[in-house]
Length: 328
Image 1 (cartoon, rainbow, N blue to C red):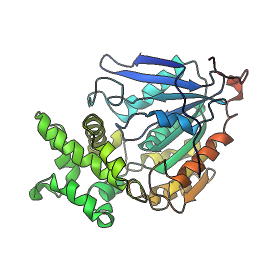
Image 2: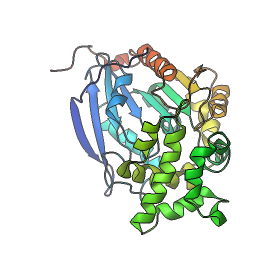
Image 3: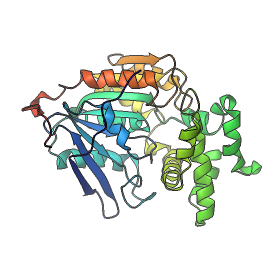
């Protein structure tokens, strides 16, 4: 059985003001003199969790985790103003500069892969390596597959709950209909829509559906940020200038070492996107897990990710004066 690295606690936590409105939660774990790695969480709007620290060897990595705007412990909660992909890319640069990091390994899955790629094509010289999982390129076809029609044919039982939240005459555009409710001034309307949206993703993320994951996605505070921020990004097409923005710009990162890990039966972010990225970036290692869905915690995916992080422990030699145990 594949096991992640042991549970650890941060050696430093700070709050970083990135605008007059937004303040981010940022933590560092592991070895202060280790290879810097930044964990880019999913959603958008998902936030970081303690188990996310466990993808990395704490003796070899300086692990940076942060909650993106509007979610987790960042404030204000579920805020949509000043919250775009480009704001988040700028935030990552502010974090890197604040921490005195020259280059880092960038690790992201699902929406985290989207943001990691966007950051990398914008700041390629700051990326020592990329480790990506469950590829999401935020193209219109991907949004339609999961939120309009496609995944609904595989999970019609879970879809029934998602569908029921929207009146029949508005079902021609679920994202638009959900956005209307998720931005309603009525907190009861917002809450009901947020739970239905979030539970749909939580119900479909694993090869073997997990009631526990669906329930966690339906928790009030998590669902509010997750659903509102996701829908905000998706109705705005990721704030990209074109539908194929990431694929069109992959040429900027083809000399960066990379690993792409994809579950064969990922319904949330189907393998077509990972395949398209692989064809545009053949230099990156492409790893398909035959018995997995979307979740990073599935054994096959977890094993490939742990292998990848072990491989890049010396990716930034210029910042590793010494590798030692963090202070007790």
